[in-house]
Amino acid sequence: MKMDVLEELNKKGFVDEAIDLTLDLFDEIEKLKKEKNAVILAHYYQEPDIQDIADYIGDSLGLSQEAAKTDADIIVFAGVHFMAETAKILSPNKTVLLPDLKAGCSLADSCPPHLFKKFKEKYPDHLVITYVNCTAELKALSDIVCTSTNAVQIVESLPKDQKIIFGPDKNLGAWVAKKTGRDLVLWNGACMVHEIFSREKITKLKERHPNAKFIAHPECEEAVLAMADYIGSTTGLLKYSINNDAQEFIVATESGIIHQMEKANPTKTFIPAPPNNSCACNDCPYMKRNTLEKLYLCLKNGLPEVTVPENIIVEARKPIERMLEISASLGL
Image (cartoon, rainbow, N blue to C red; front, side, top):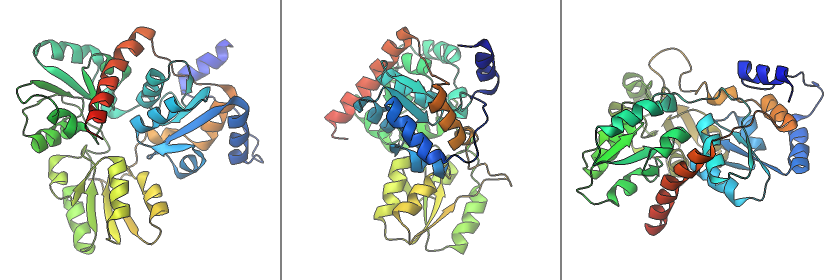
């Protein structure tokens, strides 16, 4: 590999190459997928064009599970870095590509593994449950991984006297503690998108739309969750919007999910919950680093590739498998 290409990747995070403006990128990506036996996974928070070209759309763990089932040689993960790592952990023999290596995550960044290791050492008799939205290294320090869909059930499946550390998301952890009645030791981490919703602005929005259902992701702060008609994972919010008879929904999570909500419910109205300032902070800046152009260049060049050290893959896979076993035993 040319050094200048590596330097460019390290500097910018993506392949920066001129693209013929006459190309139909949707057609070109489809051709490359067949030629290279690749599959494209897109998280619900990606821009609509990427969601529309994807083979699978979903939340982070569900996408990685789908990837592991396929016979594709290459996984292009249109999401953020920890998601691509999870795909590599579950599919170590596949090549995993990420359109932009700098598509990180504020929540994952809020829990550096070396600091979490010291935190964990303070509670030697505690079991460690980590939310899947974390780095591979953090998963390797965990006993069980959970998702926002199964976090409550995972905690409830353990003996009531089992002491638990929950990380990295303090808001999800606090919600789980409230739902289960368990006294969890929480790591002080959070997602920048879900922490910025304004209770005051949502209250005013609800007054203007009295028939709207207010739905929220459990990564939101407790004051916002207290107002919600429904709290659930990204997939849970989507299902609720489909199954509920309401015609208007105020949505407190990253706004990318609204594309799928509108496709599934063309007659319903979806309003993104407002942040507490004037910026578009309910758009994740990391998720939106991926573009259709970067995805095309990523697939064309086979770069950037996400790798995980073999010893981390082995250790990080264990808590994921434990979660899957518990989920299967509970019929989730």
